[in-house]
Length: 175
Image 1 (cartoon, rainbow, N blue to C red):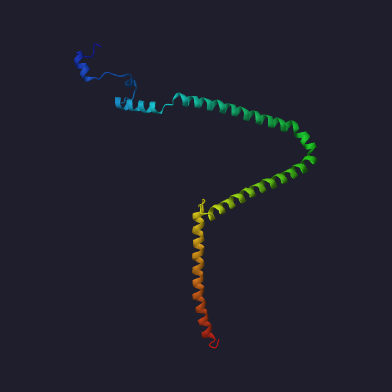
Image 2: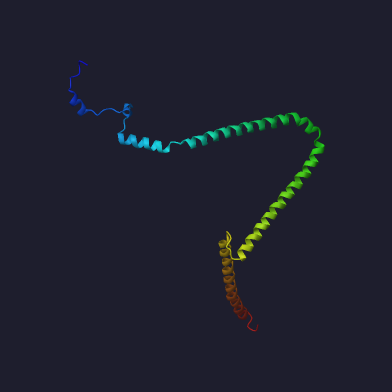
């Protein structure tokens, strides 16, 4: 303290601004930058209902993870204990399982084809009633392209057919 020259208090107040608690860090920000940052941070902070939602999500996730672990453990232990029984009775279970698999696959595919048929018939009904189902614009575009192509082929065949008839007359004048 003895090394520093003495300044009066009015001069000290003019040359230095009072320090706020935020300016004690090694990086200093202006008050407007700091207040804008704090305001942005406060705007993005979660409220109490979001925290309760997060807590319930964590609890339900933990319960589901515990149940999944118990299921996997029970499955592994069941396979370990029931493997000898399964091996000894496999001549009975294999034909039964194969039969059930074929019947189940047939039933599921039949149901799928039925749903597809009902959906297709519904689309066709709505299309012909003028209700414009999804994809009808592409169907109309394809139909017009096919019609245009067929008319161009017909015109070309007519022109080319006349050309061939004239060539046939040139090759065989009496024909």
